[in-house]
Image (cartoon, rainbow, N blue to C red; front, side):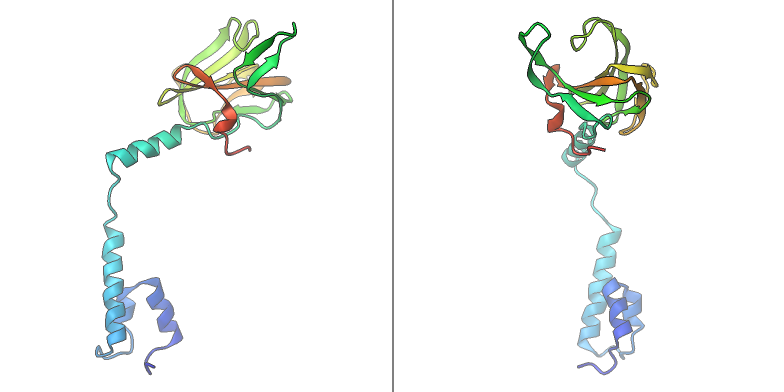
Length: 194
């Protein structure tokens, strides 16, 4: 047991301050305090020189931040991705999800990106002349939002994850994710369900 070793001294050592270790009550001959001082000094040096990310790690980090992990609006799913029956009874591919929502709620971007389309598109998501917003996120990822009441963004505008891009209409908001032009199930990306 080290007679000059006290509880407050231990707390300072655990926090990793080499100055506090050297200010301890030992006269410098205590091997435990010497090793703790060396440990703290090495720790301070290593934390001051954190290695930079490699280009591959930086690219991976950028890719992960581009993923549309957020739900665009709170609400129950009225239609899922996949084969569904149309009004005529035929089975057709539904290329996104529909979310039932009251009017006047904010529709948000599901990932950071750039608005590449705002306006009306004929027969988008099986609807005639519905309002559509498309956001490009990089890495071939594009998200589409349709069936809203009012757009809050403009063409070429940069948006952040969670930023309001539209105001919802009462009814269903259609949300789609495409990777390199191929529709994929948005639920395979969504982690934050609001």
